[in-house]
Length: 106
Length: 106
DNA sequence: CTCCGGCATCAGCATAGGTTGATGCCATCA
DNA sequence: TGATGGCATCAACCTATGCTGATGCCGGAG
Image (cartoon, rainbow over all chains, first blue to last red; front, top):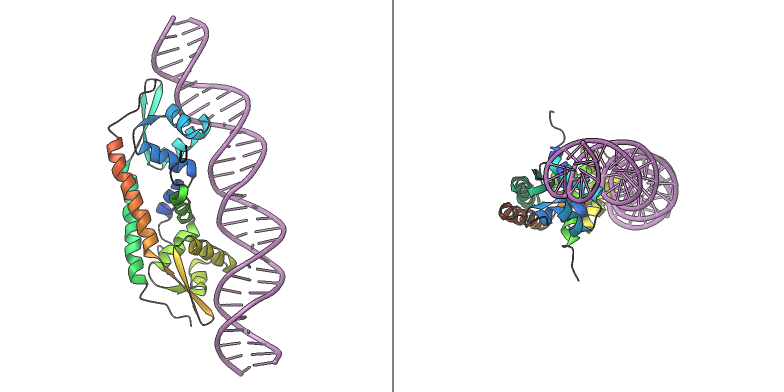
């Protein structure tokens, strides 16, 4: 078979939102665009830590960076979130049907 | 302040779906009810591993257990998934607005 | 041109969490 | 009632990953 496993893509992406600090950053960015210094003082985390998580979120397509003078602003990419939301919704819908069938054990 | 942070509850729950094996189990259970032995042969993981993840998923409210003879069947709880989906959808919606405002740096 | 401040990157450390082998419990069957 | 098989639990190990301190880059102000 070609795809014995399901796309681990989404899974890897979901994993990123599982980190508390990353989740906090995402929620902060869901309210307004912020630069790194804001995120530092809002979260209380140190600069390299924040910078690291922003990099991770950027590489995953969750945030977009926008250099502005010597500050760097970050904004959320709503699409990335809504794709995940839709995917989870689909899964929930299928789960409704799954309650009916049960695979026999022998 | 009482709640400087936002509810890490969802975050903790999302984290669970970030594990590849757990995600695989959830997707398998989204198709039909399965017992542990099915999940073992489907995933290729060993029995204690599967059992451990099922426990985690059960404690998080993602799956329900249903003892059936000497087999134990598991089924997905669609509600848990749809709650997450809705939450992510809300976040995406707010992110749309967030693109407009930007906090000044000084 | 020089200094400063915001930010990214790097190597090392520490903890969390997934996997494993061994073991015990319970239900079924002979 | 003893044997078997499905499943849960436990302690130990190990890898992944988040955090830290140090350093370098770059844009802007003087």
